[in-house]
Image 1 (tube, rainbow over the protein chains, first blue to last red):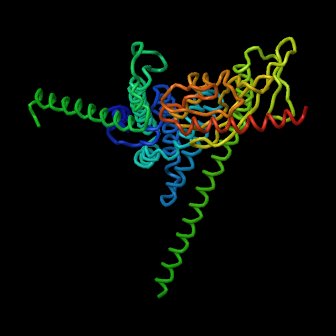
Image 2 (tube, rainbow over the protein chains, first blue to last red):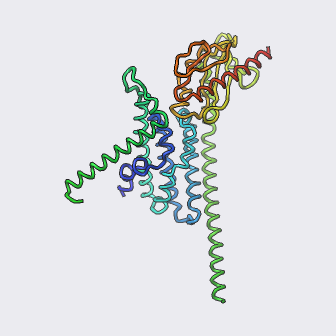
Image 3 (cartoon, helix red, strand yellow):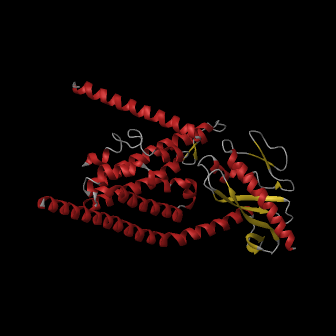
Length: 205
Length: 199
């Protein structure tokens, strides 16, 4: 049961391993705060839609499950969008069209179809929570790196020295691809090192 | 033969009830989601309305720090701004036009003589975060404070503006910068016509 939660954080991280939901990942991570806000909105949608899908899974005729899941997801996305507009107006303005676009984030439909429609509510909740947190962390890391190099700040706080030359390319789309590629590489490097250590200490392959 | 018929009708009945089940399930989900959205809409709309109103007021006060009285002049797009003593500080107006992605809506201000821009603020935009969205940033907007508008505003790229009516476009967001400039130019003309025509 714990594994349902932790697999989304590392082993099946939606961004670094499954490479899902690239549209918001690449588009909004120009600043750490935007990455965090997008991550939280996605977390809310994936958790609530997974719970609802798991609750109604016995009443869902197989042939129409995808449209039903989509309606559930779209409802939560709209709610999240209105909530942001009502309470975090500035952030909602900055994220622009990418909050409504959470609807088409395949991470969410993926969790609904692959996990929540086949498992009980508690397991679906933990699975979605892990995936959402894994997604948020990845977006914050990506946003921090790009903001640091592209604007010299992290979460709006000046980190770099005075007169630091901003790498404008980091906040351009190309910077998103480069950062993501390098981060996925680092992620795999750590993974393979951990695996090698495991093999050495246990002496089994 | 009779057996086959029975099988057929049983199948038909099953597929019929299946279709009913599908329709019922879709209908139920649709109705429920609609109901939820009505509640969300009821909760959020007044707050969003307030945010937009507050945004407009804040934008005007940002352009005219001494603004106390905001009156409608002519129509709902042009405002007469006065200070505590009732002295005319200038005119604020809403300007709207196409940006790089979707509409850009601006609040801008002019001095009473209609020859200098007092600055502008972005009310609505869907420009790319981190790039075009920098038109909302202080650095870009600051260039418009005190800009001469006896000549249409022009933009330059990657160098310091030399003339009093020039501003520097944002690196990597020329289209957004150009949009702001042309939206302002167009609306300044309009506002001039409306205000002068009325006097």
